[in-house]
Structures are given as structure tokens and as C-alpha cells.
Image (cartoon, helix red, strand yellow):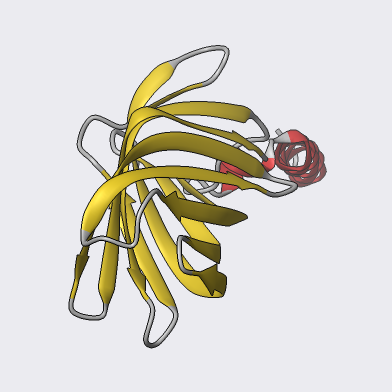
Length: 165
């Protein structure tokens, strides 16, 4: 093969590679980034409200699972944000949450406004939670308990989270 033929072959191979890279989906270039999808998740969450400094933190329990139209998988939800309002029996929050697949490590972040209601000003009782944003919505029921400068909501009944990315 002459030098000019080898140059043309290398050029053609380079053009094919560039075309393949340009056509590859973004998720393939960044394996940690989830594809566009809708995730439906169920399980339970534990959320701490710190009324003194307004911080919110929490996470899902080990039974947390999500599904897309194609598959079901175990996941972990991490909740972090701040209080945006409160009253004697409720807390309003805005959090930026991370949903992480436990099998692949892929994760996505979304923001959601939540409201936690309790049925009494006593140290413990029943609770409800609901939230929504342009990216997600969730709801569930459970219990709450208070400690020093802390109210913990344990949302274990009928908790569901739907995320559209």
C-alpha cells in the first residue's frame, strides 16, 4: 500500500471514529449521569428538621426501590436543604436531593418543596409528608418524634416518589 493510500485509509478511519463519537449518547460519555427517564420509587424515608438553624437532612431506608418502564433497582435517597416556613404543626422545606442507584452508582439530583405535618404539638405522634416541584413529587405518612432542637419524621406508610428528568 502506498503512503498516499495509507493516509487516505487513516483519514477515513478517523472520520468514521469522529462520526461514531458524535452520534454516541451523552450518558455513554458520562457513565455517572442518568438518561432522560421517569423514576417511580417506594420505600421509606427518615427526615430530620432542625428548627433552630433551619437545616433539613435525611435519607431513605434500606428497603428503597425505584423502577423505570424497563427495570427495577435498589436505590438510596439523600435529602439536604432548609426550612422555608413553619407553624405549630408543620414545616415547609426546600431540598436538593440525590437519588443513587446502589448497583451502578449512577445518580441524579433534583429539587423539591416538601411539607411535613404533625397531628399534635406533643413529643411524638402521626405525620404526613407531601412535596412537589417541576422535577418530582412525593407523599407518604408515618410518625414523628422530637428531641433537643430536632424533629424527626419517619415516613414509612405508602411513601412514593416520582422523578422526571
